[in-house]
Image (cartoon, rainbow, N blue to C red; front, side):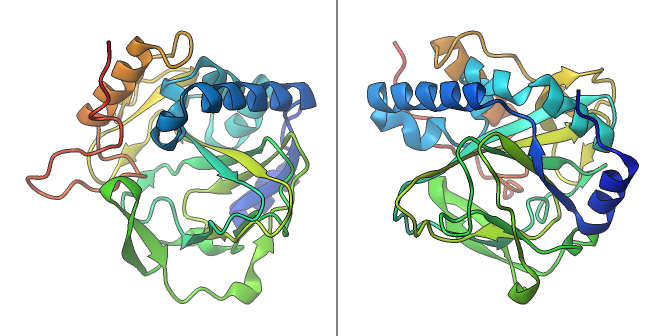
Length: 281
């Protein structure tokens, strides 16, 4: 069993991140990639939304890797025993991918208190060459000025302005290692300049007693109790990409649209997300 020591906890509180934690087995990562490959082959038209917001509601295998006991142990060391898994999102950069993510703080538009933690799970190795995550140490102490830009699915995302990139640290990870960072840690990533894919899964873990500055959040209770009242409890998926799972995710996004990735819902606007027009049998 791996638990964080007092030095690691103090480093996280000071810098806003910890990296290189060996929490997943090679077998678990290989199996996860196999599941991903099979889904991509069978449902290529659905990859763009199924691997996006709250993929943990669609696939039992996404949920299962997110509740790996060793991973939850270190999350508990940082946010306490009552834990919600509030999001899982794939971050895959094929060889030569031009995809990059500008500097941002995940809780810039909707603050969460107590704050949540993001865990980057290195399903494959993450290197400077293949576009690993980069963070700005100490940037988690406050929400920095940002601008809004358009993103997929008619979404707006915040991008931090005036970042001193000379302070950035590359989160270089071996397969199976995990990096943890505070929801207000400024982070981003560059292009994949290598001949190998960069495959990561990012999970959000939120204290069950937390509340959002806007709207009501939701999450799967993965440890302890959800008695705080600020976050609704989501269903655990049974199987993978079933009609029940798809409808559960859809219902959650419609009922609780103001999650940190979607941002505040403008007055009078209806929730919008990519699978809303999917025809189910």
